[in-house]
Length: 149
View 1 (cartoon, helix red, strand yellow):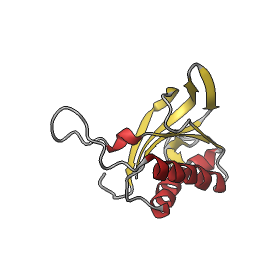
View 2 (cartoon, helix red, strand yellow; view 1 turned 90 degrees about the vertical axis):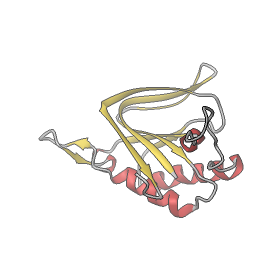
View 3 (cartoon, rainbow, N blue to C red; view 1 turned 120 degrees about the vertical axis):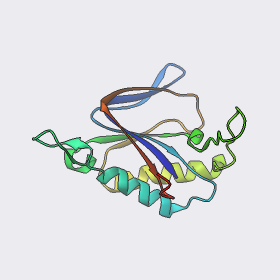
View 4 (cartoon, rainbow, N blue to C red; view 1 turned 180 degrees about the horizontal axis):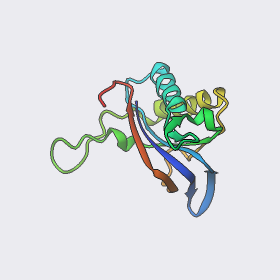
């Protein structure tokens, strides 16, 4: 599983001009699910995201987590995080999970964050979404359950 985590002042998702979900201060989390991912990878990335100390404390140092600040999460499924561009000019998405598996694990990811008492919203699975954000910092972190980066 891969995640792109962005610290945001606000973020929202619209589909066909309709607002689907929005958050204020917190994290916008794009997740890509691999064909061999299980709930173990979901738990790992969700817990890592919730506990990353990437929010500023009173001294202006990145010392607080999403849990510490009481922020929200907006989770967007993004299979393109498994785009392999090493050969040719067209990405291969062979590493990405099939939609029926990915959707189940995407929903589980949202549930894990909610179980951690993080107010969590999602995008619309398999929809063409417009994602709007005000990146705070900017702060963008990459996570990979295989610890490749």
